[in-house]
Amino acid sequence: MKDLTSSNIHRKNVLNNNPALKEIYKELSFPGIIFEGKYRFTKRQVATFYEVDDRTVERYIESNVQEFKESGYEIIQGNELKIFKLLKVGDKHVVDLPELGIDKFAPSLGIFSFKAFLNLGMLLTDSDNAKLLRTLVLNIVIDTLNKKVGGKTKYINQREEEFVSSAIREYNYREAFTNAIDEFIEPNKFKYSQLTDKIYKSIFKENAKEYRQILNLNYNESVRSTMYSEVLDLIASYENGFSSNLKKTSEQYNRKLKLSEANSLFREFELQSEALYLPLIEKARSIMASRDMALRDAMHEKLKNYITYLNSEDFEKFLGERSMALEDTLSQNKEVFQRLKDR
Image 1 (tube, one colour):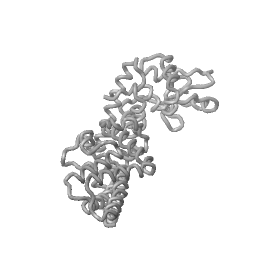
Image 2 (cartoon, rainbow, N blue to C red):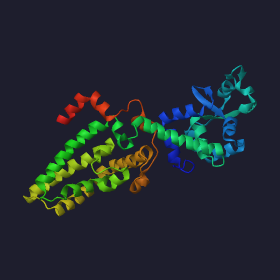
Image 3 (spheres, rainbow, N blue to C red):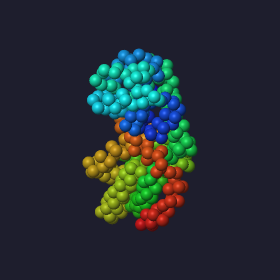
Image 4 (tube, rainbow, N blue to C red):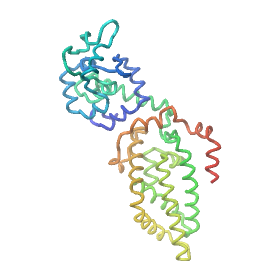
């Protein structure tokens, strides 16, 4: 199970997962105070929930100031503070509720958003309630993910709106690539797999076999059907560029190339294209490593230095209202995709 106390990336992946956050709030039923349209909690409230003293809460905030700020912890004062103190719970102003621990004469007050409240629970190591919360949070994240994708996380990439159009474009370029291999390279049963693996390794450092093992794909499952649209687009660019080089070199030699020559030619192509492709390669590596860790619980060891957290837009893309299963995407956009395929 992921260690939320030690990984800022894992914590951010929870806090940016809005579909899961809704379920977590419902499950916890921890009443907040509505202020400026959001649930807010005082330091005394969160300290009581986690069964720690106020000083412990303060210590964690001081040690992780930026993280708490990003998750919604803020200090209010002036007119904002006056408005907050006069909010009512039942027939009493919040300032008069002892369980909230608000100093009537303090010039400022730190308040937690629901995300900041969870953030504290994911950091606290000396609270049994925080440990229970972390277990609950991770279970709900997994349950929410499985409900959205029907347990088929290996194909979660297909829920993205852009997947089908990228897959069709890549299919067309792949066909042109294999045709170029047939036309410009001497017969060799290894030429397709070797050159495909060279593209994969150039982009994400893994060959097809390694990729299959990481995603636990069966032999009859398509590798590319599990890839994100950005990765497919980059593969298509490689295939298109290298096909052109194969054709040009074969015509210069006035003969088909040996596989060893094609492998050398790919190395030249890779070096020549490095400056052009590098920003896209780094983006593709980060996307693959980060999304697979968060959405598939799969670790690409060779890409671990590229891992970052997903933002809320990423989770919305694959788990939100606009995401949908592949068959639904095809059904709703049949004519558009047919035109794209026929281009």
